Amino acid sequence: MYILNNTILELLSLYNKLIDISDEEDVYSAQSLPGLPNYRIAKDSHRNVAILITPASFTNDVYSPPIELRNLIYRPRCVCRICSRNEDIITETVSVLKCISDDPVLIEYFLRSLSGLIMSMPTSPTESEILHMVSKIIELFSAMESIPLRSIEGLWCELFLIAQAPQINRAIIAWHAEPNELYDFVDDLQRIEVKSTLGPLRIHNFNLDQITPVAGTDTIIVSFILEKQMTGLTIVDLWETINSHHDLSSNLRERVSRILTASLGNDWRTSRKVAFDPINAKKQLRLYKAEAIPKTETIPPEVSEVRFKSELTNIPSLSIASITEKGGLFKAVFD
Image (cartoon, rainbow, N blue to C red; front, side):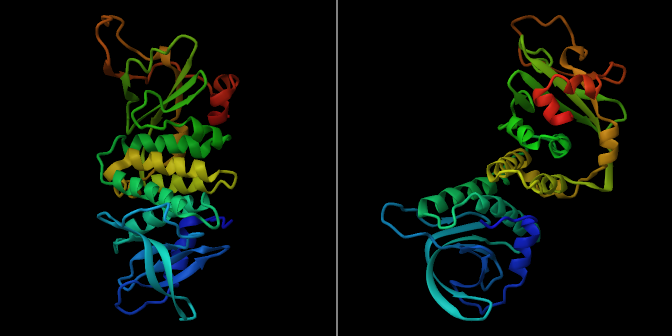
């Protein structure tokens, strides 16, 4: 299996080495991925980046019509002329997934998404497996046009915790599958909720339910004060740090990609430009018991979904040692 250690740079490098071709339809300059001859990185006569996939076989059991989105085209059975690096041209029927854009940021996003999915694919995929992969790409590209569900600052802090976690697999598994879930990390009876502010005061927004844990559960509030910095880390930087872990499975890489895309929505482009100081973030990190967060005690039982702000500047925080000795998720994230 082709393991992409530096996924996006490797695919971009292969793409940039492809020769240019004449202005004709269904002609591609292509190069097989090392160790995966059924997968070829390609570009068409308009320099659009594409992935050409040769199925194990074509059958009548699977049918998918061509799909056209704003920046994405999928043609399941396309008769193409393919020009290799030595300029030999062959005619072949392949599945074509193409990003129709000259925006380098979008091209990078397309290749980044593909790299993780290809790692989870069999060497010789069926048409059904190809369609399943394409559906995931389509889901990601559709999410990029949606309204953001979380702030860039909040997502940065969650990724920062994951990237620093000594047990990164467990941290990712515990990470919220849906952006609007009550807690950011859940594992058995332990909960972690991440809050961020640009300061200077440690003031955060809370949902009353977040700091009123269910009996038997243990909830920690993680508070960050962030500082923007041109030379700091962006969400993309943290994403790459997480992907660089060699023991991370393709399913977990895909999970991170899916949650990030759904959370960022159409803020994905902005997220590349906003950077925060990681040293200051680590220095300003504080941990609190959920029950210690200041709140009103006079909420009638008929009232629900209460939201408010609390300042934590003078609230006693917890030591990391006192948290990690509880084991489980807390040890996996903070040890």
